[in-house]
Figure: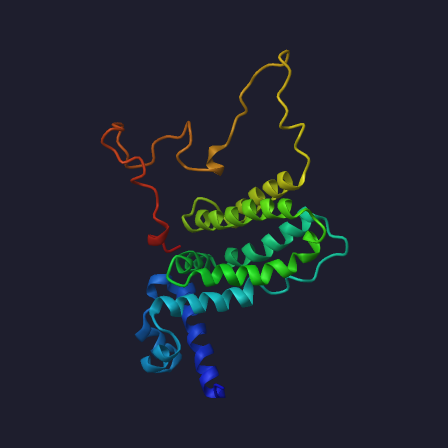
Length: 242
Protein backbone atom coordinates (compact mmCIF):
# COMPACT_ATOMS: atom_id res chain seq x y z
CA UNK A 1 0.00 0.00 0.00
CA UNK A 2 1.25 3.49 -0.78
CA UNK A 3 2.41 5.48 2.21
CA UNK A 4 0.84 8.83 3.14
CA UNK A 5 3.74 10.72 1.60
CA UNK A 6 3.35 8.94 -1.74
CA UNK A 7 -0.41 9.50 -1.80
CA UNK A 8 0.11 13.16 -0.98
CA UNK A 9 2.71 13.53 -3.74
CA UNK A 10 0.45 11.81 -6.28
CA UNK A 11 -2.45 14.13 -5.46
CA UNK A 12 -0.17 17.17 -5.50
CA UNK A 13 1.09 16.23 -8.97
CA UNK A 14 -2.42 15.95 -10.41
CA UNK A 15 -3.52 19.18 -8.71
CA UNK A 16 -0.52 20.93 -10.21
CA UNK A 17 -1.37 19.68 -13.71
CA UNK A 18 -4.93 20.99 -13.36
CA UNK A 19 -3.65 24.35 -12.12
CA UNK A 20 -1.35 24.66 -15.13
CA UNK A 21 -4.12 23.71 -17.58
CA UNK A 22 -6.57 26.18 -16.08
CA UNK A 23 -4.01 28.98 -16.00
CA UNK A 24 -2.07 28.46 -19.24
CA UNK A 25 -3.68 25.62 -21.21
CA UNK A 26 -2.98 22.04 -22.22
CA UNK A 27 0.28 22.70 -24.05
CA UNK A 28 1.79 24.44 -21.02
CA UNK A 29 1.93 21.14 -19.12
CA UNK A 30 5.60 20.14 -19.13
CA UNK A 31 6.97 17.49 -16.80
CA UNK A 32 9.81 19.59 -15.43
CA UNK A 33 7.39 22.42 -14.66
CA UNK A 34 5.02 20.01 -12.93
CA UNK A 35 7.86 18.50 -10.89
CA UNK A 36 9.09 21.90 -9.75
CA UNK A 37 5.66 23.22 -8.77
CA UNK A 38 4.59 19.97 -7.10
CA UNK A 39 7.92 19.73 -5.26
CA UNK A 40 8.68 16.23 -6.51
CA UNK A 41 11.33 14.69 -8.74
CA UNK A 42 10.88 13.65 -12.36
CA UNK A 43 11.58 10.11 -11.14
CA UNK A 44 8.53 10.33 -8.89
CA UNK A 45 6.34 11.50 -11.76
CA UNK A 46 7.57 8.75 -14.08
CA UNK A 47 7.05 6.22 -11.31
CA UNK A 48 3.36 7.16 -11.26
CA UNK A 49 2.71 8.04 -14.92
CA UNK A 50 4.24 6.47 -17.99
CA UNK A 51 4.14 9.61 -20.16
CA UNK A 52 3.05 13.24 -20.33
CA UNK A 53 -0.17 12.19 -22.09
CA UNK A 54 -1.00 9.67 -19.37
CA UNK A 55 -0.27 12.26 -16.68
CA UNK A 56 -2.67 14.77 -18.25
CA UNK A 57 -5.26 12.02 -18.74
CA UNK A 58 -5.05 11.12 -15.04
CA UNK A 59 -5.40 14.79 -14.07
CA UNK A 60 -8.47 15.20 -16.28
CA UNK A 61 -9.98 12.05 -14.76
CA UNK A 62 -9.42 13.43 -11.27
CA UNK A 63 -10.93 16.79 -12.21
CA UNK A 64 -14.00 15.17 -13.79
CA UNK A 65 -14.51 13.00 -10.71
CA UNK A 66 -14.41 16.03 -8.42
CA UNK A 67 -16.42 18.43 -10.56
CA UNK A 68 -18.63 16.79 -13.18
CA UNK A 69 -19.52 13.47 -11.56
CA UNK A 70 -20.37 14.54 -8.03
CA UNK A 71 -23.91 14.60 -6.60
CA UNK A 72 -25.43 12.75 -9.57
CA UNK A 73 -27.63 10.33 -7.66
CA UNK A 74 -29.99 12.56 -5.60
CA UNK A 75 -33.11 13.14 -7.67
CA UNK A 76 -36.74 14.17 -7.23
CA UNK A 77 -39.21 11.34 -6.63
CA UNK A 78 -41.00 10.24 -9.83
CA UNK A 79 -38.67 12.31 -11.99
CA UNK A 80 -39.85 12.42 -15.64
CA UNK A 81 -37.41 10.92 -18.16
CA UNK A 82 -36.59 14.16 -20.08
CA UNK A 83 -36.13 16.13 -16.83
CA UNK A 84 -33.81 13.50 -15.42
CA UNK A 85 -31.72 13.18 -18.56
CA UNK A 86 -31.21 16.94 -18.75
CA UNK A 87 -30.41 17.15 -15.04
CA UNK A 88 -27.55 14.72 -15.59
CA UNK A 89 -26.36 16.40 -18.79
CA UNK A 90 -26.32 19.81 -17.10
CA UNK A 91 -24.39 18.40 -14.15
CA UNK A 92 -21.66 17.16 -16.49
CA UNK A 93 -21.45 20.22 -18.78
CA UNK A 94 -21.82 23.13 -16.36
CA UNK A 95 -18.38 22.76 -14.71
CA UNK A 96 -16.86 23.34 -18.16
CA UNK A 97 -18.57 26.73 -18.28
CA UNK A 98 -16.46 27.75 -15.28
CA UNK A 99 -13.34 25.97 -16.58
CA UNK A 100 -13.36 25.99 -20.41
CA UNK A 101 -9.71 24.93 -20.59
CA UNK A 102 -10.64 21.70 -18.81
CA UNK A 103 -13.13 21.01 -21.60
CA UNK A 104 -10.29 21.46 -24.04
CA UNK A 105 -8.08 19.15 -21.96
CA UNK A 106 -10.86 16.53 -21.84
CA UNK A 107 -11.26 16.71 -25.62
CA UNK A 108 -7.55 16.30 -26.29
CA UNK A 109 -6.90 13.72 -23.58
CA UNK A 110 -9.76 11.57 -24.90
CA UNK A 111 -7.92 11.34 -28.25
CA UNK A 112 -4.66 10.09 -26.70
CA UNK A 113 -3.74 6.44 -26.11
CA UNK A 114 -5.82 5.26 -23.18
CA UNK A 115 -8.28 8.12 -23.60
CA UNK A 116 -11.15 5.63 -23.58
CA UNK A 117 -10.69 5.73 -19.81
CA UNK A 118 -12.63 8.99 -19.85
CA UNK A 119 -15.54 7.29 -21.60
CA UNK A 120 -15.51 4.44 -19.09
CA UNK A 121 -15.36 6.88 -16.20
CA UNK A 122 -18.38 8.77 -17.53
CA UNK A 123 -20.45 5.63 -18.05
CA UNK A 124 -19.58 4.30 -14.59
CA UNK A 125 -20.66 7.61 -13.02
CA UNK A 126 -23.74 8.50 -15.06
CA UNK A 127 -25.43 5.18 -15.81
CA UNK A 128 -26.11 4.22 -12.18
CA UNK A 129 -27.49 7.73 -11.60
CA UNK A 130 -29.84 7.23 -14.56
CA UNK A 131 -31.04 3.82 -13.40
CA UNK A 132 -34.31 5.10 -11.92
CA UNK A 133 -35.10 6.85 -15.22
CA UNK A 134 -34.50 3.81 -17.42
CA UNK A 135 -35.93 1.04 -15.24
CA UNK A 136 -38.80 -0.76 -16.95
CA UNK A 137 -38.33 0.95 -20.33
CA UNK A 138 -38.01 -0.97 -23.58
CA UNK A 139 -34.39 -2.03 -24.03
CA UNK A 140 -34.16 -0.97 -27.69
CA UNK A 141 -35.70 2.41 -26.87
CA UNK A 142 -33.10 3.00 -24.16
CA UNK A 143 -30.32 1.91 -26.54
CA UNK A 144 -31.52 4.36 -29.21
CA UNK A 145 -31.69 7.27 -26.75
CA UNK A 146 -28.22 6.44 -25.50
CA UNK A 147 -26.83 6.19 -29.05
CA UNK A 148 -28.10 9.64 -30.00
CA UNK A 149 -27.51 11.45 -26.73
CA UNK A 150 -24.03 10.12 -25.92
CA UNK A 151 -22.64 10.76 -29.39
CA UNK A 152 -24.25 14.20 -29.53
CA UNK A 153 -22.75 15.13 -26.15
CA UNK A 154 -19.26 14.19 -27.35
CA UNK A 155 -19.81 16.18 -30.55
CA UNK A 156 -20.93 19.17 -28.51
CA UNK A 157 -17.71 19.05 -26.49
CA UNK A 158 -15.96 19.61 -29.82
CA UNK A 159 -18.20 22.62 -30.50
CA UNK A 160 -17.31 24.00 -27.08
CA UNK A 161 -13.60 23.51 -27.70
CA UNK A 162 -13.53 25.09 -31.16
CA UNK A 163 -15.49 28.09 -29.90
CA UNK A 164 -18.56 27.66 -32.11
CA UNK A 165 -20.93 27.13 -29.15
CA UNK A 166 -20.93 27.94 -25.45
CA UNK A 167 -22.30 25.82 -22.62
CA UNK A 168 -25.72 27.58 -22.36
CA UNK A 169 -26.26 27.19 -26.13
CA UNK A 170 -25.22 23.55 -26.00
CA UNK A 171 -27.59 22.82 -23.12
CA UNK A 172 -30.51 24.47 -24.93
CA UNK A 173 -29.76 22.39 -28.02
CA UNK A 174 -29.50 19.19 -26.00
CA UNK A 175 -32.75 20.00 -24.20
CA UNK A 176 -34.55 20.24 -27.55
CA UNK A 177 -33.07 16.92 -28.65
CA UNK A 178 -34.05 15.20 -25.40
CA UNK A 179 -37.58 16.55 -25.80
CA UNK A 180 -37.77 15.10 -29.32
CA UNK A 181 -36.37 11.77 -28.23
CA UNK A 182 -38.88 11.38 -25.42
CA UNK A 183 -41.99 12.89 -27.04
CA UNK A 184 -44.58 11.67 -29.52
CA UNK A 185 -43.46 13.31 -32.76
CA UNK A 186 -45.86 11.48 -35.06
CA UNK A 187 -47.89 14.61 -35.85
CA UNK A 188 -44.78 16.67 -36.57
CA UNK A 189 -43.45 13.91 -38.83
CA UNK A 190 -46.68 13.64 -40.86
CA UNK A 191 -46.73 15.30 -44.28
CA UNK A 192 -49.24 18.08 -44.76
CA UNK A 193 -52.19 17.59 -47.10
CA UNK A 194 -51.88 18.70 -50.72
CA UNK A 195 -54.19 21.64 -49.97
CA UNK A 196 -51.67 23.17 -47.55
CA UNK A 197 -48.83 25.31 -48.86
CA UNK A 198 -45.60 23.39 -49.42
CA UNK A 199 -42.93 25.51 -47.76
CA UNK A 200 -39.47 24.44 -46.72
CA UNK A 201 -38.82 25.29 -43.06
CA UNK A 202 -36.16 27.88 -42.36
CA UNK A 203 -33.22 26.31 -40.52
CA UNK A 204 -30.51 27.95 -38.49
CA UNK A 205 -27.52 26.06 -39.83
CA UNK A 206 -25.24 27.61 -37.22
CA UNK A 207 -26.65 24.93 -34.91
CA UNK A 208 -24.98 22.29 -37.08
CA UNK A 209 -22.05 23.81 -38.93
CA UNK A 210 -20.41 27.09 -39.85
CA UNK A 211 -20.43 25.91 -43.47
CA UNK A 212 -24.21 25.57 -43.99
CA UNK A 213 -26.22 26.96 -46.92
CA UNK A 214 -26.42 30.73 -47.04
CA UNK A 215 -23.24 31.29 -45.06
CA UNK A 216 -20.56 33.58 -46.41
CA UNK A 217 -17.18 32.04 -47.04
CA UNK A 218 -15.10 32.13 -43.87
CA UNK A 219 -12.32 34.69 -43.79
CA UNK A 220 -9.37 33.71 -45.94
CA UNK A 221 -11.25 31.69 -48.54
CA UNK A 222 -11.07 32.72 -52.18
CA UNK A 223 -14.01 32.76 -54.52
CA UNK A 224 -12.42 30.02 -56.64
CA UNK A 225 -13.78 26.80 -55.15
CA UNK A 226 -11.56 24.77 -57.42
CA UNK A 227 -8.38 26.07 -55.81
CA UNK A 228 -9.53 26.91 -52.27
CA UNK A 229 -9.58 24.23 -49.64
CA UNK A 230 -13.20 24.33 -48.49
CA UNK A 231 -12.19 23.31 -44.99
CA UNK A 232 -8.91 25.17 -44.88
CA UNK A 233 -10.00 27.67 -42.26
CA UNK A 234 -11.95 25.30 -40.06
CA UNK A 235 -10.41 25.54 -36.58
CA UNK A 236 -8.40 22.55 -35.51
CA UNK A 237 -9.62 21.65 -32.00
CA UNK A 238 -6.27 20.08 -31.21
CA UNK A 239 -4.53 23.38 -31.88
CA UNK A 240 -6.86 25.66 -29.92
CA UNK A 241 -6.17 26.71 -26.37
CA UNK A 242 -9.17 28.70 -25.09
